[in-house]
Length: 364
Length: 224
Image 1: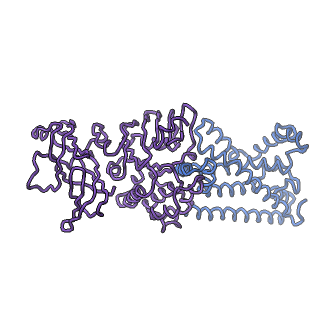
Image 2 (image 1 turned 90 degrees about the vertical axis):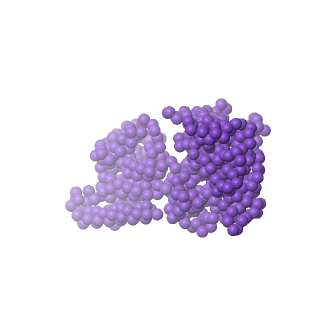
Image 3 (image 1 turned 180 degrees about the horizontal axis):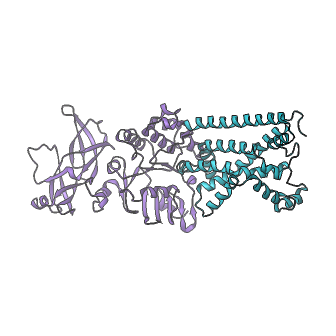
C-alpha cells in the first residue's frame, strides 16, 4: 500500500456520491484517537458518510484509508465488503437480533472476529453495566439498555474504530442518561477511536475531541473541537447554540455555597457542583452567556469574570455581532448587540473584561 | 409392492410430500430471497409464473408436464437418453411435478417473511463481520422462522393432497405412483367404500393435525 507513512494514525476519507438531488462530497483526514464528532443539520449527509465508511453504501468514487490499509480506492478497483472492514457500527436504533438473547447478541461479532480480541468479554460487560441483562431477550430491555448492548456488541468485534450514528437521538432525556455516561466512560478507559454523528451540539461538546462539520453533503471544516467550534462564520455553528469549549482543572470546593473553583488558562472560575481535586473538566460557554464590559464591576450578580483580548468582531445579523476573544490560551465567543459593540467601542487587539453568566461542566 | 394392509398409498404419499418439501425449500430459499430483494423488471413476470399453479386446474399443469417429461418431450427424451428410464409414470417424475405444483406454497410465505425482515438486521450482521451467506443463515433464516414453518407445512400438505397432476404424470402404479388420493378414487370407483373411508379419514386427520401444529407453533414464534 502506498503512502503508508502519510496515512499512519489517520482515517483518510474522500467521497463523491450523487443520488437524485442529494450529493455527498467529503474530503477529510481524521485523527485516529478519541471521539470525533460529525456535526451538521438533518440531511447534511452525516449518516450517508458513516454508511459509506462501513461499506453499506456505494459511492461513485471514493478513497478510504485507515492508517496503512486501503479499504476503498475506486481508481484502483479496491472496495472491501462490509464484513471485511474492521469497524463497529452503532445504529440510531439498536438493531439487536431479536432471536438471540443479550449474551448471544454480544457474542455475534466476537465469534466472527479472526484477529486477537482487543477487549475481554467481562471488561466490556463491566464497563457498560450489562452484567444483569445477559439472559434477557432484546424486547425486554429499555431503549437505553438496548443501545448499551448495541455498543458492547460493536466493541466486542474488536474494531479499529467505532461508528456511532446518533446513538441517543431516538431516546428521551431520561434514557439518554442511560447511555451518554457510558460513552464517556468508554472514551476514558478504552483506546478505541469513535466517529460520532449528531445534530445536537451539546452532545458533541460533551463527548468529542475533534469535530467534522457537514452541511448539504459537504464537509466544511475539521480539526480540534475547540478550534472548529469557534468558526462561527459557518452558519451551522452560529445561531443560539454558538459557543466554545475550554478545559479546566478543579482546584477547591466551597461547601458553604456548593461551588467549585476551577483553574482555566486565563485565571479561575466558580462552577456549580463538587469535583475531585485536580480533575480535568470540560467547560462549555455559550456565546449568549458571555457579556463584555470595560471595567470589572464591583457589585454584580455575575460571579465569573476573565480578562481577554478581542481577536475579531464578526457581523452576525442586523442587530448582533459575535466577538471572538482570546483568554490565556483559550478561545471564547461573546454575542452582543451591534449597538453595545459600538457604545463600548470594541476593536480588535484591545483588552476587555468578560462576564460569564453560566457554565456547563463535564468531566473531560 | 403395495403393503398388504392397504396403507401403501399413504406411505407413498408421505414419502413424496417429504421429499418434495425438502427439494422445494432448497429451490425456494434463493428464489424467494431474490424476489424479496430484487429491483429487476423481471420480478412481476417471475412472480406470475410462480403463482400459476394456484390458478391453473391441476390437469392443465399435469398435461404440460406430461408433454415436457414424456419420452418425446424436451426434458423426458434427454432423461431417457442419459438413464434409459422414462420420467413419466415414475416416482422421480412425480417429485418433479409436485415441485412445480407446490412451488407457490413454498415461495410466497418465504418471500413475505424475507420482505418483512427489512435490511436492518442484515446490515447489523454485516458490520459485525458476517459474510452475506453467514448473515443469511445466522440472522435472516432464524428471524424468518414462522415463514419457513408455513412454507414447510403448506408444501407438505398441498403435495399430500394432489390428485390431478399425479394422475396425468404418474398414473396409478402400486408402490410407485399410486398415492393416497388416487387410491381413494379407485376404491370409490370400485364401490369399496370402507377402504375409501379408512384412507380418507386418515388423510383428513393427518391434514388437520399438521395444520393445527403449524398454527400453534406459529403463535408461539410470533409471541416471542
